[in-house]
Length: 97
Image (cartoon, rainbow, N blue to C red; front, side, top):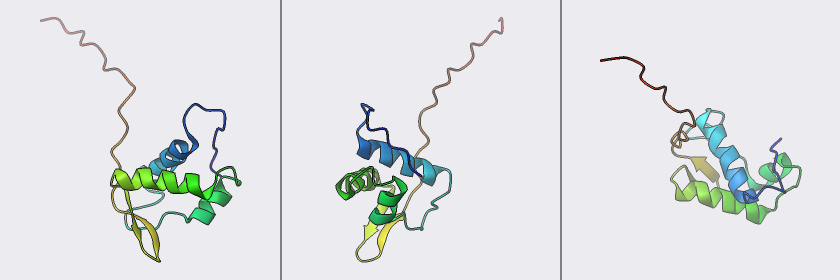
């Protein structure tokens, strides 16, 4: 089940794009594999988002070069997106010269 927060300031299409991006990074949807169809994604969200919103999320992933549509076959993963920037700060170097 994909959780979409309707109250979030982050648009729903970006939330969905983020979920799909993470699935690809973790290898749940490997390069060369088709991502779930619009209908499947709609079901995974419990009908919380429209097909237009799903298309917008897929368009984001396509624009960044992660997925590519193949007419009549679906949308396929073509690249693993870069890992998000680390939120951890590097530890200070405590060595004394």
